[in-house]
Image (cartoon, rainbow, N blue to C red; front, side, top):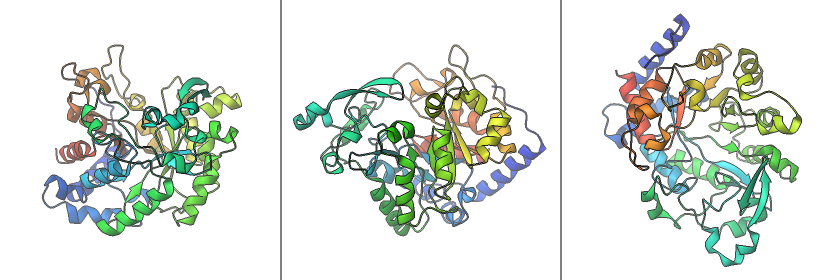
Length: 390
């Protein structure tokens, strides 16, 4: 597998990171995974120094440990911490009818809750245009928080994770305020700072409904004193103008998410801005993002494209280009199961079988990324240990 050549600056950056991580790679996760001599040293790396104090490559629990529990539940978040994740993506934020922020993958909750089993909500099923896509189901903005609290989470992709269906119906939908209180409690209990990485979902869509997300999250962050530059809360969104707006409201580290190269952020579509993600990852686009954000969250295919057969090709220059303007890169998402891996790392054809995910991690880490979102944080931590000690 070909890898991108690194210049002297990148080589020095990588060497320094590996030296640091050799002493402090897994934090509390070292104890969980039975790795000797790591827990105490790594804990010191999570102090008040801001996002750059995190271990690199940073392992981010995608919607918690969503490979093992229904996503965006306190159980999934807690398990991610138990496994040693450096950050927990808690959560994807969408509003209720009465203005509360709750943690769901999408505003449509038919696939992530048991709402279909509640006859009292049958009439709420409807079809809406969500970022230009006709979507049918039940939407958080049509429910009060009290009503959503009567629902329970279910596994979103049961074909790939049949084992997770064991936990269907056990966990409720958390609010963002509950997550912040949980973060404080877990930080106190574990004796090390817990980091979270919430995402604002469909900001343009909700702003048109009178449910602006940026003002709501800013208000909650200020209330809990977590709106500062070194606060352990990184906020992300697929809409660049949403992050620009948030940059004027809080001092938290901010990240612009980037989908496929040919796609356009929906706020660009609404504003008539013709630029695509391919434009945003050019040097000029990255410089613009760096004027209001601290990082980008590109899809992994922007780091290493795949060919027509789904196999990895050569890395792009995105990592080096982003680093040149001071941006961190936290690409998404590595998952253990075959269907989510590049074709050259799959083993067999079973939809829920694991492929050679360690090989995939090694290949992506070699590009110099600063971290990665993963549904299985324990696997990511072992892969990082392999990489830094190779």
